[in-house]
Image 1: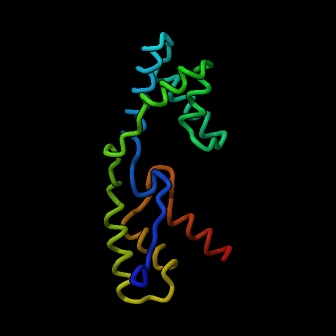
Image 2: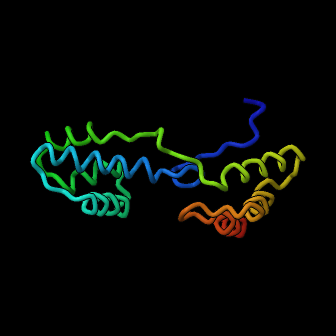
Image 3: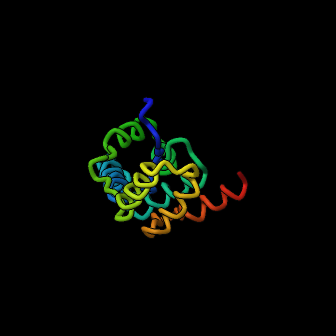
Length: 144
């Protein structure tokens, strides 16, 4: 671990797009509910997931299923069927250039990696989905 200089925690939709994986999961959920005789559209499943996220539910999918179905056995079965397919995750186009820029910064031995990170993010136009990393880092630097 002595050689580790940078550690990234990607909590979703920062470096990696989860859109396809979640879309697949919601389709599997709708199909599982249909097999249990429950009618649920893909739009309703998306709305339940969005509501779960807005509530800051610990596990969005579980809370979304709770919003869609009352029966506990049906919930368990739907959750089992609606597996998250990690293989559908893909990196955002700007993720690799961003990480390469960070690698160059680290190799130079700069003393202010966070300030350099802002420049690197700007240099490659990094702005993944809803996260504007340069803006967030500038806010963080202002409070540091």
